Image (cartoon, rainbow over all chains, first blue to last red; front, side):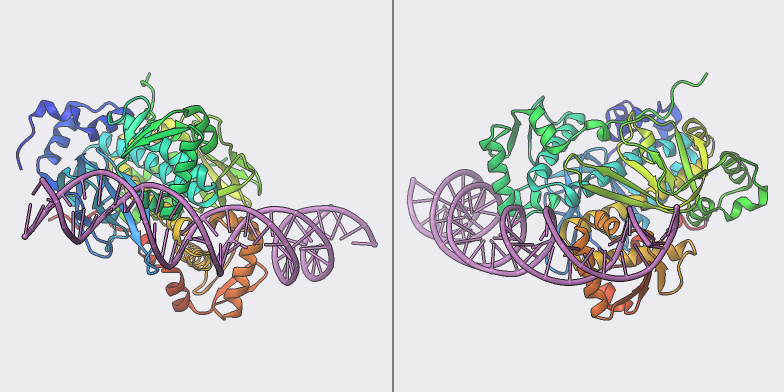
Length: 251
Length: 251
DNA sequence: CGGCGGCTTGAGGTTGGTCAAGGCATGTGG
DNA sequence: CCACATGCCTTGACCAACCTCAAGCCGCCG
């Protein structure tokens, strides 16, 4: 645990995200820097939040990935979102008496430990930040909504196409993917738990995309060979992943 | 279009919701009253938002229901959420250059017309309100996430059980349902588009719940006969629908 | 009274889950 | 440096679930 250089905060993925909606002033940045002082490490496979327990602390992701999921009595698992740098772990889990989802790191992560009360105080003191967070969570909701469509009404092949493009786009946005390829952080079983398919069927669908020349894979490295065709197949529009400014310059 | 009596604002479903997270002060209420001045009507089946168009105005629901959905090229429809009094139409649609979902009224509605810029200004001026909205949207996200689980991993019968309990609970929260029954605002086809089933299969699953004595239906009126059994079947925990205070009283 | 939207039921076919076995790479300990 | 274990990917066979299509029915509203 150590302090940030004050300047370095500007490069933090959370700040980048918030800044895309609204331009934060010096006071906002200073307040955020205060929040981000306590850094902690989470090793791969570490449970950060376990469903049913109470948490009063958020973890803001600086680097690494995690999954937010729920285990059902049947033994099935549904992954609800893939948490990336700049995302807030404990949102919404911490806002309830008992966490409604679990969160597990899927690789080594660097996190910031933020007591919920400090977070609430910051929101109440800094309307700019609170407003940026409203926009931030609207986008979060849009991503969730798109997943409902995936799971509910798209065909397996379409789901997979959509999922791959979403991963590519989100990873590119945080500078973790090249123009047409990225490293898939999930196993095929994990992919199945995101899009609601069995692992063997994920395998079959991946094979089909490869066979048709839409993608290529070597190990966990996914390359999009025919983005246009994938977009049509998965009805993917990057719109819902873009960030909107809260308002134009006031007159 | 006419002005609210200033006192009546306290009973507005949006204010009730926000107040559950944080206690709004006089200034907050006055500012919100300003937002809610322009009232408009939407008739049943009216499209309020059409995917792909640009909107710079929110509609806050005073009464009535609407659905937020997307039409796929295959002709299938996925309903992403059921919008109830106190909800904000255009959230997240308006936050993008082009709306990512459509919204249609499913009964006559009373709405408040709120330009997006006014909404943004209010957030920026009133940290209390902005913070309450952050909590509000966290809950929204949790509802979406629960729908992902429904569509992705629950069995059809379980989905239906979960859906019925969610409707009952949400309707009770706004005073539109009795202890164990409510009026279903959707047709069976509509239910199918929420939980990702075909209309005939919804019918069969409903029949099964009736046959097993878990529910009863007369017309659109649904009565929950065995809540405990339904909760186990659908793994339903009302937690995710409850509202949390932002923080305890500060010392 | 006639039409229409929504509910109900049935038959049949495909999809995708389950189960199971085998292969391959990676890592670990002897 | 090899033997073995482990985790993940791959493939196949089988079967149940759920979708599609279709027809008939009911109740409501014009």
